[in-house]
Length: 70
Image 1 (cartoon, rainbow, N blue to C red):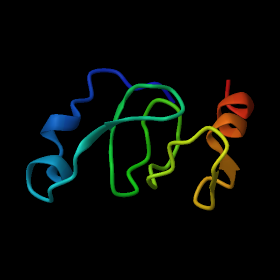
Image 2 (cartoon, helix red, strand yellow):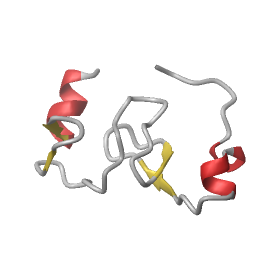
Image 3 (cartoon, one colour):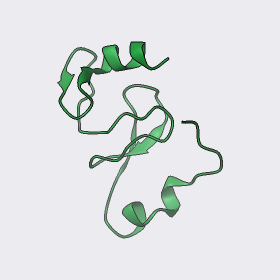
Image 4 (tube, helix red, strand yellow):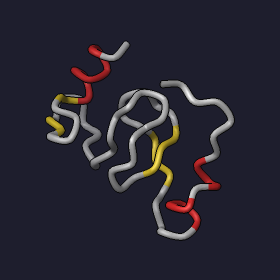
C-alpha cells in the first residue's frame, strides 16, 4: 500500500476542508486526521495514538495493527 509522489498538502481535504496533517501512530508517516486512511499502512486515523488503546475503526490496538501489518 506504499504510495509514490502523493502530496497530502494538495488534497481537497487539506486545502478546503480543514483536515490537519498528523503523524500516523502505526508507521510514523504523515497522514491526515478525521478518519483519513494512511496511504502507507492502511491505518484509519481515528484519534487513537496510544500503543495499547483499542481502535474500533481498525479492530485492533496500534501495537496489534503494526504487528499484523508488517
